[in-house]
Figure (cartoon, rainbow, N blue to C red):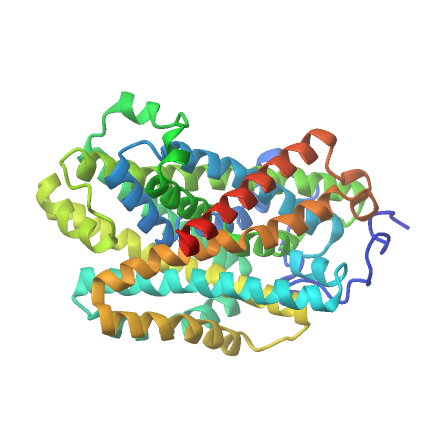
Length: 444
């Protein structure tokens, strides 16, 4: 028996495959070249990268760039490096233990602990979905003049989009996501060309500065960027969808799968970094340098891009990218919700039922805020959703690090000493920053 495949180190045996309907459904060429194998493994990384460029990132990046110029670029870079390492651990858990993070928690912790972790994870997914709802509604409002409250309701159509795509197969979903990411990339490449950022201040912004910690306003947005970049539900998602590849479930097969899936993840997240950084760079070059430092939301950014950059195409490209971002994020949010509910509770709902539940939870606060407070309220809610995500992050990161550190659970694939130390340091930074955020939010 393969020592990795037994139940040593787990309290319970694995009950079923993660996302059983697409488990091992994507063929891997057994004797193909490096390039062919990499192409076969590429896809899950793009789905994960979507979460790192969703509408919530836009709000925090725009606010950070407008208020503080290029200073918070270093936070985006550091957050992205955190994400690359954590997503690698997520890939490792899925490939080696053949469990997604939710299943791993269920097979390790006491049911009461699992219930708490499930609740926190559902809160994170609801916060993420809230950002998608608001982002899509804002994009519809900016591009077509549809009222925010109506746009919020229209987003429920995403349910039917998801059902259609899931019926076509997992590779089809990956292709749609890749196409939408390409649209976002082209849009921001054009925006950067128009905004003409200063190169040296931009490069200087990649170096961390002490004031990020000492300035409470800057720290609040920095933690929001961390929450928007390292997404807790992505750790559950990645550990599941990496198992859609039909690689040999042997030691050698897992080594190869881990190598190619980690390359896919790292390349995709570097693309997400470029897009995230582009949003902040555009805000810094366009708003901060022109004295419009109070631009803190997507609506203001859209309205000011045309007069400041001298072309209506600037605003149009911005709106199209925002709509593509919102639609992309809704795909991965649905999959994450399904993985979490099935993994923690072993409850298998029909996809449209699960999607309706998740979307309804997000629509209700977004609809109330959009009706009562309009643009300003939805913008504040968008930033707040990212802070909520950041606060949930520890509850996904700590179990992930704990499982992948375990020799009993991971065998020879357990994290090496240097990786254990690095993972511990990152976890500690995340926990300390979130405790500080709680103190500043509720007691200052």
